Image (cartoon, rainbow over all chains, first blue to last red; front, side, top):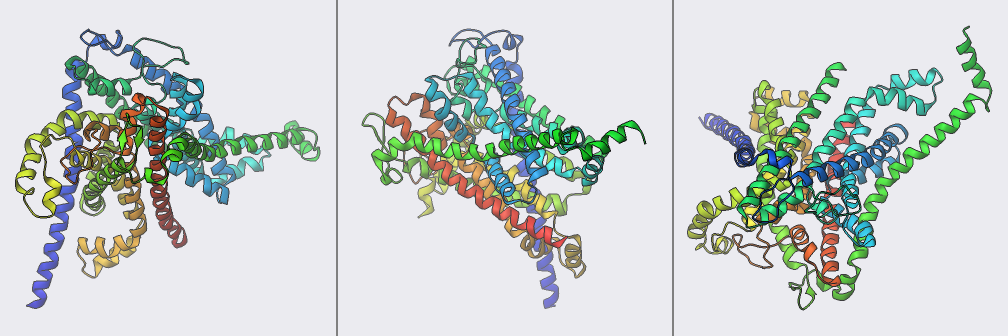
Length: 283
Length: 329
């Protein structure tokens, strides 16, 4: 009888744990749906063609986000151009020359910390080394700040993806007398291309919504500019300033910007997932 | 023997010919990629040193009391870090209280309970939460969640839990929605995907034989997870929790929107407050004196030190399991 009671209690605990775990999952999904629904229902009505053809307006006037979109594209593009080659090279070093060395371990450790370090710290860092010596905010400083966020993402994925390439491929190429730098460039990069591209896409997704580092580097600009030495408008900072403002119309613009950024990030996430999935099937 | 093969073999014996050039190129390539790898080290070091340099004025003026002083007066030019530190710690604690059990539940659901077809889409959906930019969390928090808290949750807390002894102090205050509790909840939602992803991943590294033997002697799912899976993965789960904590401590935009930006030290979670990151984000472009700016950078330096320690612990705990995994296989 006692045993039966104990069995019942164990079953009850188990059922309770299962129920709670299911509720926890629903809890997580609940917020996702709520947040996406908000962005959709507030962003979609604010989406107009003028968004992409007009500048950010002063209070009380009509306008769009053209300068902000353009600024974001320029700075994100530059950040990718600067961060990707350095990141791929560093990842190559870790995977091909320092797989089990102490230096490699240290760099991996530091890279992982850089990967999850608060982005506001990157902003302050670039402010200290670029904005303060130059005396003013600039788009270049913004791009450099973003490239420090791109860097660790690309390092990590390149390292991991190159390590996945079977060592028989390296040995086969080396046995043919191909020098190592050619092995890396012509064999390993080709084999790991999809994975490395995934890393770059993930990095792009991460920086397209980054606000804190740009706040201290690129700041904002009410006008359209392509000069890299001047402050430049960008979507996240405009969203921040407009959302914090008391004007209804600015709020609507902020929601429209938020909608576009969110969709862009989510689509990028799906695309990079797709790229990775295709290669794993191929393997 | 074809001509090209002859050339290759020739090259082997002629150090100044092709082999010499390849050798040099190999060397150049190796040095180049090493330099890029060292750049990663320099980046972190540079971040720390440049912030320390920027903060030197504040540290020199206020000394150690900067850390526990509650002053924050731009007119008198007196600054202290206690209020932002307090806000950062309180919001991060609330976030962890919410995120840790929920993430554990999600990992449990995805590894042991959900049918196989459901696991992939559900975990992808949870990971989407991590992809949403933090400024979107901030806007949603300010325009949707804060009004919800102020009209539904805060008044109830104030009325029912506020009068209780001890814990009542935490839930007293005007129901404005902005404040520590709202910020902590939003932070909690933001770190759930990070902790649950790590936890789920390490749960799947538990050897199947270990779990199956436990099931075979009649254990329930809960007993297998609590007595077999969790002890096996303990250090990595702690690592994942610290990873989430690092995020929660340094998160900027979402907190800036929801916390209320009030320089106020209050025991009540319903009152607005300030965090390190939110203070910097809000006041950086308004800092009108060098000492003000330097104090903000000093705050950033403190945040850097704290998150560095937390993230370092996280990585060490995570690599522990990876090492044991390596030893087993």
